[in-house]
View 1 (tube, one colour):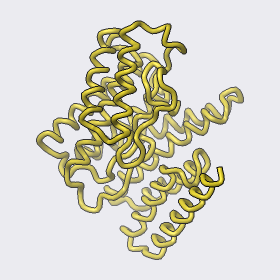
View 2 (view 1 turned 180 degrees about the horizontal axis):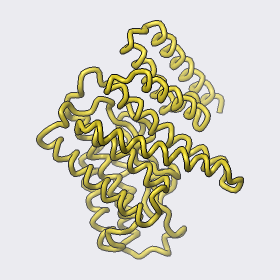
View 3 (view 1 turned 90 degrees about the horizontal axis):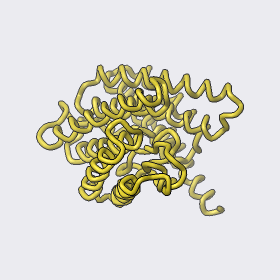
Length: 303
């Protein structure tokens, strides 16, 4: 995720410039699917930031979060998923609430690597029984890194800042992968409440701008989508459907009907319908997804 910093790299120390460059290079390797190389670079960037600006700095928290999310996704990708785990989290990855993912603002718009292998996707079911061995160790490290990043941002930004809420939602995906559904549920409930309040406050202030409100709406949709996934795992299907439906509406309003996250959320609704035995509804949603993707492709071609 992006952390605000001086507008020009000339304002940064040489060590900060080097650290930012290494972090951004890690983002490139991540987007190419080269996870081992990206992991090594994130670790290097984290060391450089700790040495240059200290552990209690926004940029340090940003790189720690980037590394944690990569460790999370790598752990889930290399282990068997729980039965029926086909759903995904949306908007809960490396892009911060401003929509950018580089530290110190040195690279603009360098977001995560897209669905499935990017900063904001994680297999829905997680690891059965929390995983073990190297994968379990990686998840535990990811948890520790995200917990530290959240504490840093709380001290620097305040308890209810969107970056804090996003971090809580991201940590919840790690806890869910570890099998701690109760703790994950508590975090997601708090994150959605705070993001909802942030969005309401932004809408009430004319100076905030539509982009900020839309971004907050997309982050709220991602947290709602993840909470819906968790409720499905808990067998609370009615709650899951309500959460997915609201998330889908927010994505349609704040992104586009054919955006990757909007499509994923609709897919989750279809999977929920199948799990509830409503094949007719599931089929209708799947056809709607096809129409959305085709319409988005046509719009891209026209542009």
